[in-house]
Each structure stands twice: as structure tokens, then as C-alpha cells.
Image (cartoon, rainbow, N blue to C red; front, side):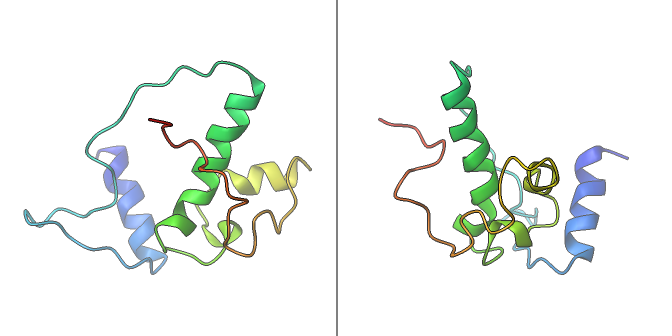
Length: 101
């Protein structure tokens, strides 16, 4: 079984509402991507913030810590970020990891 199928089942089992596209496929993974090489520590932090905030951005949860599949939980356990990091559901105005075109 492919890893994505296992992940899809665990996400669905957690009660996350999943929509399907016109082909009947779950709209969970993005079809396109853009390559990005991490340039420095600041760039790494911005990309990690993007990943942690993404479930809120897409309205899957109200707070980043509510997403059970997030690496944010590891950051909290390690004392790197507080449990209420961006807990209001509002970013600090930054576009975490977004392309600056």
C-alpha cells in the first residue's frame, strides 16, 4: 500500500472533511510544486512556519496545534515553539513560505 493511502486513511479517520475533485480523487495533496532550496536558518524557519500554518490557512483547523499530523507538536515538545504559536489563527502578516513574485 502506498504511503499516501495510509495517510489519507488516518486523516479521514480523524474526521477531517475531505473533498473530491472532478475525477473523484481526494483534494488533499497539491498537484503542483515549486522547487526551493533552503538558503539559511531564517529561510528554514519561514518554510517550517508555512508548513505549520497551512492547515489553518486551508480552514482544516482553527489553530496550528489542532492539526494532529503536524511537526509543530515535535517543535512544542522540544521547546522550540510555544503550544499557542499563532493560536489566534492569524498570521503575523507574513506569507509563511509563499513565493514572493
